[in-house]
Image (cartoon, rainbow over all chains, first blue to last red; front, top):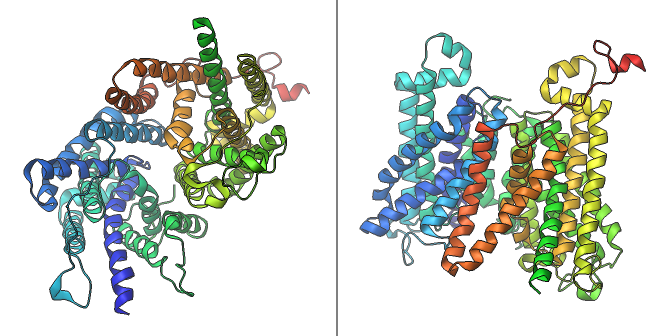
Length: 296
Length: 325
């Protein structure tokens, strides 16, 4: 039992909280800007590399570099929105989707030009699990990842429920035309949506890099689980995205559990395929997601 | 000697540009004519490449691959490649075409990604990361440069055949329905057209050409491994080709494919003259340019080089062509 928790549940929770952070952005951008943002994974990578640059230059722990990475990624995202996405506000949403693929390639190319393609670890050496929590094997980095995610989700909850901007964002996500009629400034809401998405994406990127290592395809490789999580939770539902992220992360880790005999249930090489399978099942069975999101 | 090298370079350029043109034509049927957002070109490309490679490669030369190695004639491999890509498109289309195009984007990218995982993991079938070697190339027994020239002409004929087929389709009532669905789905449905069935047809046929493109690439390169179906080369380069050339226009798709491929390979000549560390950087810079072209062309020149021209309606103005028949 302890082994099961240590080897499957804890990694699932860690991966799930990272997916949740990324999926919230995907889900909110989809419902407020009305398009699937395929450069989201690369925003995560960008945030992770910004923090990496700070870590290398200053020798700080990655968590201290996180705020700087967040600010940098948010700034870059607003810049990208103005240059690349804003001219498409009146076009068909699918045209922006193509543009978002272009943006994804550009971000990744910039990262490769500056930092190269070699995967690098954030923290050198092997760290032992925390002594005080025996027999549970919890590494410090895992506690950091789950803790940071909780703080960010709590902050998002306060923003959405206690501020005027949060209310406006929820209104626009529910019905954009109605929101506009009531005098909500569309461009400001869009800007704040990008900021929220970028903050969470940068954090998710830094956290997944802490957990594994940093490489230029870090975020791109996570696109499928992110979209699966957002669709599973219901597009436009931030809390649904959190739920979806946790479910997908858990399933991916649990899938390698040797339930029958001693072979893993799913070969680890196919873990990503699982997220996709869940997404396809959702699209057939319940495209609005678990929490009744939008179907476009 | 110098002239001979130039000739070989020219044949390589036209051959690969032609193969890209087949895929760009397939994408034009998907996106340009019907408005289906297929970003899984790499997936159909890989299906085609592996199918044909496994069927046609001689058993002894298949290089560690256990299955396949049947040594069948190449045209059989090509047809099977297109058929299997079409079958995959049918399965994806059945699920995703009734939802908005964003879902099709996610689904096609997912299929491409999973096929890449299969290619990497199923070493017995695909040779894993090393891929399949010893794939036969048409006319490879002929002397240089005649084999290369014959290959180029063969690809040229295939492009011409695909082009004529798609032009015929575009000018037919079927093509009109496709444009109607793309431009106003509700109106097309109100006219009694089965939107989903028509979309599925366009998706399947377009994807079959992408599979054929994969098969031709595998036979031309004589080796195929998962790296070759990297989305940058197999998906996004094709998208840039179509959008630059002019989506909706079959001639535009061909012009875009050859032109973009010319620029893509011409930069390799420059890279060759530079120190190696620069060469790597220029590869990333080219990736940046692909992204930039996608955004800028869509913003500033959405029509591309050759804009779409809807075919002229038969008959005099005011008379519907169907009414005349």
